[in-house]
Length: 263
Image (spheres, rainbow, N blue to C red):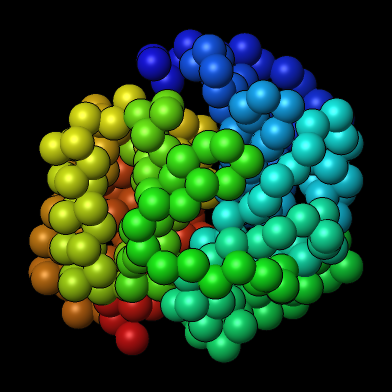
């Protein structure tokens, strides 16, 4: 499946990119919210499974309206646990480390930060996880998933559409990189995706991407480490990254990355 082979449906605020795999449809929801969230809906035989959650109240309403004619069998909540008022009665699945991340770890810190920045527009309630799962195969709504635990939460392989969901890629967007070791872990993950030959890589902050985009991101991460090694402070690091990648979006992510490399 080519990443551009989709039908686009424009909604009131966001837009939906629909990929038709025959038995399964993938609805990639671009929220157009202030932090560029993406939410993914997999539809099969009148049922749907949602990966991640919107976290602004207007997006909650918009997506709930979009899925009203299907039975939402469950939600996989990995890195984005805010938005707890969205479909509160639907079963929610997560690994224990993802729960810890959102309740008391780095995810909770981000939720608090966003709540302070965006005020009443942001839904800071955390989803209540009803099913704590481990690694391996998980079937929800007639769709098979493979759960892969990561340092913070978990990634999701979707064999029926030859895709994988992870937190961040963005071939022309900065990412939150928590130091050189984290960059190495991201690179290892991307190389694994390339080895497995996924058609699509789904991420929380970008439209679906492909393996060429993964290669671009690996080169960026390697270079990010080199730039950091040659700098002594966050400001000069950000200036050099900005000079080399002037067209990249996600300046707020670069700010956070600089904070990690030069704590």
